[in-house]
Length: 375
Image (cartoon, rainbow, N blue to C red; front, side, top):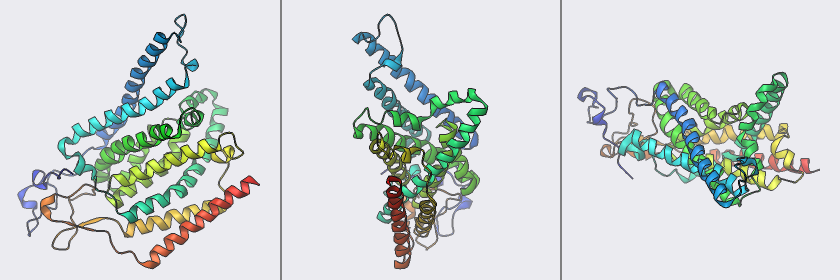
């Protein structure tokens, strides 16, 4: 792992700690600021546009060579499923490569330390994994309510129904059966988890939280993250997930923790859609409301696991026992020359038992919901 750039590059000599540690910045918090963050968000749209244009040229060329386009027709709705997968999957992979290149150029050789590519603690991995289904239940209910509201809006203003063509949730459900599950997971889970976390939590969130604090920084970042999903219903539904992923990043100080949550959330949505298609549970996966018991159990599980994550959050201790503080809220690795140690707090058996009880209660409510719907 690459070492972080020493803080002396950003600090004035008078900002040094009496014991020789540099703890406060002289040039203010790091970027991106809000204008640059908006530019990065617009850049994501541009990257998708570029990727789509490249892939369309490839697909049309392949169809012309194979004779699948007769008489100059260019109706891609008649294209084979393999071409649709190429368009969707290729878009994700191209955007991921563009994002990685852009972030590498933005932070030069410091990308690994800025992102903090250290592995999360096993307890944090367990907490993140345990949060997936409760958060999915809550975000699913948010999606359902937003969809109902959107339906009323489009009834009043029918022209807005054109935006439904951009609903990626429904698009992914439609293609869930035209590719092997590993391919679908690569397209829907791996690509977005890496690319979107890199841009929104790793790049944009770094500067906004440093400048605006946790509350506003996380909220603005999550709104920008939601905006790239375009369809109003999807935008509303992913804001809570964006907030959760950012708070997990701040607590664990590991880039892989929000990536893990993002990957598991998208994987669960893919598997659930795949398994429920054509069964009586299809409506449960897309339209049915969450029962009050499951809703309460989900909220309790998220709160309890969130509190455990907060109390075991990663902190960097200087040799004198104080916390390393660059002068702004940050997830990045401290300079190696400071000799910091990692402190993840103390978790009691009571706290662990409480978290386990909350999750088991959720699991029981989750199973009961499925059984009740099946009846």
